[in-house]
Image (cartoon, rainbow, N blue to C red; front, top):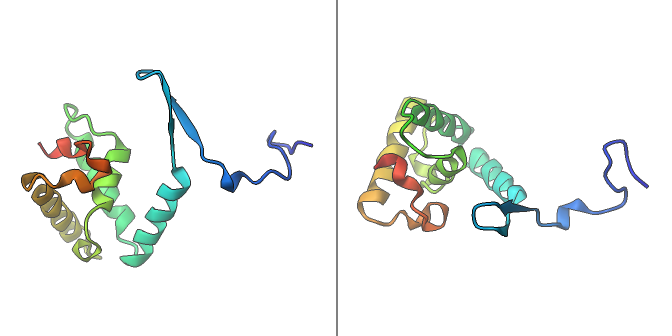
Length: 125
C-alpha cells in the first residue's frame, strides 16, 4: 500500500542508508544526511544557537570570492570541526574565532579533522 507521497507504508525509512551516485567516479557512495543533521542539531544546542548563524556567515563570505571552490557542505563540515568554546553569541566574534581556529588547523597541517582530511580548507588557501 502506498501513501499519497508514493512511499511504502509500514517501511521503516530510518534504518536505511541513503546513497548517492557519483557520475565522475562511476560508483555509488554512502551518504549520511540523518547523521549530518543530528550532529548539526547537537552542535547548535550545545553552543546556544550560534552554530547555524556562524555557518551562514562563512557561506556568505565564501560567495564573495567566485574563484573559491568550496561547496557549502564542506564549509559546514569545517565550521563543525571547530571547538564549541570558539563560538560566541556575538556573531562577528564567533566568525573571527572560528576563522582563526580554521587557519590554525591549516597552518599546522592538521586539517584532517575537517571532512575526513580531504583538503576542504582550500577555501582558506
